[in-house]
Amino acid sequence: MNEVGDQPVDGERQRKVPLIIGVGASPGSPESIARFFSKLTLGADQTLVLVLQHHEASDEPRLREVVRNSNGGKVAEIADGHVVEGGTIYLCPPAMITTIQDGRFAVRKARQSPGERAIIDSFLVSLAEERAEQSIGVLLAGTGGDGTLGTAALKDHGGLAIAEGVASPEQASPLADGNTPASIADFVLSPEEIPAYIQVYARHLRRLEPKSSNAGYHSLNEELQSVNEELETSREELQSVNEELTTVSGELAHRVQELTRTSSDLKNFLESTQIATVFLDNEMRVMNFTPAIRQILHLVETDTGRPIAHIKAHVPIEELYEDIRRVLRTLASVERELSATDSGTRYIVRILPYRSIDNLIAGVVITFIDVTAVTRAEERQRLLLAELQHRVRNTLGVVRSIARRSAETSSTVEEYASHLDGRLNAFARTQALVTRDPESGVDLEFLVVEEFLAYNAREGEQMRVSGPKVRFQAKAAETFALAIHELATNALKYGALSRPGGRIEITWRLDEGRDPAALLFEWREHGGPQVEPPPRKGFGTELLERTLAFELKGHTALAFNPAGLECAIAIPLSKRTFHTPVVAG
Image (cartoon, rainbow, N blue to C red):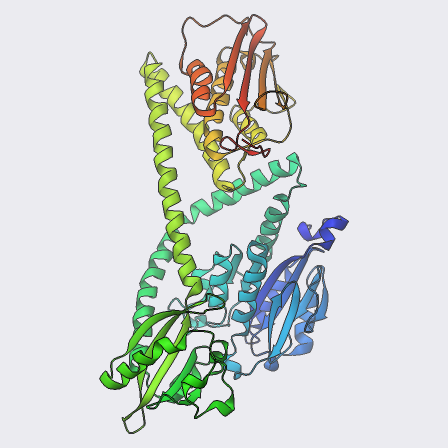
């Protein structure tokens, strides 16, 4: 298969950090690994890191043979400080925790027992924080819950998360209650399907780079339309999964609360090695602690027996002293939030009575749970909801305006229905362009070409389009798209597009000699029937002359020449109207 990875890249792109694909797998599922690599094509600007759970138990020669079956990419080992290189498949070393920091690998010895290392989560979380949307995580079958946190981190940072689906109930994991990567991944696919989705995502990222051509954007537009159609068919399934996840999340929260309330012996807490926990006696002296607490308190093995007040901390630990005394006095648990003074990391701190084997109160158990990512996710969700509400109100306002003005300028029900349908379709096409990349604006050439494609008119046949790269802001694009629709509809009914020999020339340029600088857009028709001025001004004329002036501060000049309609539109360059070029106003 000749995918993105087979295409040549220039020197500048070679120097960039490659697209990194983190693959979490289990030696207990060798078939999944073989099926995935049999379809994999790795480009020179892509890197794959295979994180194998329980690597010590794997068949190393067989694993290397399977990896080499992929198309492209050399196989290499990982060393601490090694720079991540493109066109390479890296194998994580066994019994080690591997992460990515500043474009290099960081490797350290895993201190936990094999079942508690979470090596896949550790790598995927670091990948998400390092590369954001330039990252892909793949979770093959058999990893259980390891990879769930990494999958969530990838989605939170804008990356792509893909998990292998379970083929039959007999293959389901004991954690199939929703706490698995497949339950929250962007896509759940078979191993053979996953490489194709990786390459689609890679093409999407590359074609968003500034050096992309108009042809590349057109190809990307067609491809994303196809993907959007596929995603549309699965929307109901995703909604059903979301409802199930909500139910499972509620059940999981209830179970966590029960575990916190009932788990009071030291052994159970020590087994949860990823939870930062410290055990204090009745005199607030350190009895024991988990390794994860070292990120919060500067504890070493010799600190056992020392008062907690003598320990240096990243958090204001002294704020907990009164809470500790209250728990020892009332035997009721206490929960509160605490923030690190240096990094701003937020923790949920839970303090519970510690009961000895004789059911005596022998001190307290203090756990610290990092909720920084959750807090940020909640804030992001609130912002997205507010933005969605704003967009919906604006969209309804535009639709109402189109319906009202179409009714005012239509003489029959059939004419009203025809005009309304065409204008709503034009508005919908613009909305599709806006939602593909809301932060980057809408390309003017896309607006023009999309409108003509709706009438089966293609560039080079009955139209010619030329002009510099210009991108509208979303709201301005909606208004200008309706103007183009009115011109195109008029050309189809009465102008150049009503005859096979008719032609339309559309050009634009930036006039920086004006004060203020402006975009000059010109529409010229020829080869159609003889043009006569309309007996009255309709919706299209009103939109061109009045709406553009009101919404975009533009000026429109219409010339009904017998040889063909000419329309000149001047729109001042302002940040409110244009995304690019960047202007001072």
